[in-house]
Amino acid sequence: QVQLVESGGGVVQPGRSLRLSCAASGFTFSSYAIHWVRQAPGKGLEWVAAISYDESRKYFADSVKGRFTISRDNSRNTVLLQMNSLRPEDTAIYYCARRHWALDAWGQGTLVTVSS
Amino acid sequence: DVQMTQSPSSLSASVGDRVTITCRASQGINNYLAWFQQKPGEAPKSLIYGTSSLQSGVPSKFSGSGSGTDFTLTINNLQPEDFATYYCQQYDTYPYTFGQGTNLEIK
Image (cartoon, one colour):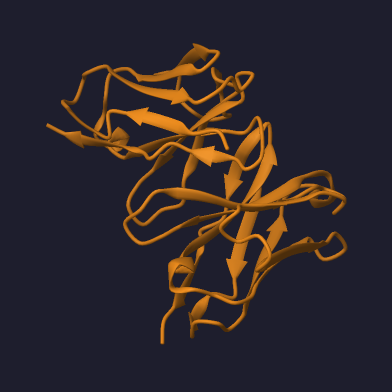
């Protein structure tokens, strides 16, 4: 079955970096775009970033542009979200999701806390 | 950016009721509208894509409609497991944007 598993979350000080990983299984990973969506505590969903199936196109929310980068390794069925210059407002659960028509499959999320 | 406005932000209903949630886009989105259900402590679950197409495994009590900038999610015969938060999302243009959510509570 389709499965997405995020990892790499944790507590980090403002200004530091963190790298999240999304490991996929159960489908032909190299055929699908992968997105990241985050949810601050008690708040709604915020789209963060996306990468096309072949890594040729990458998109970012204005709130993270210039600080976050996204990459993928189709040989390892993995997408990475590199988060630099982290701010307290980046505190959230980060979900990765597969784009198939829409965002049809989601991981369970990984919590990132930015605090001194 | 396309702004998505959901209403109501919260809704109280009883088991067996039919409810409708609306979502308005700030510009046309070519029917690239999805709906998600989220329960506390869980990841969002995809219900509907392309305005009205049900994701595999989603019961037919859920339905979506609309066009242009105005869209609706209807849930028939509410059951206890349906009480959750619902979000709309446009995926026509980047950045993708979500509505603020509708918290569906038991009356």
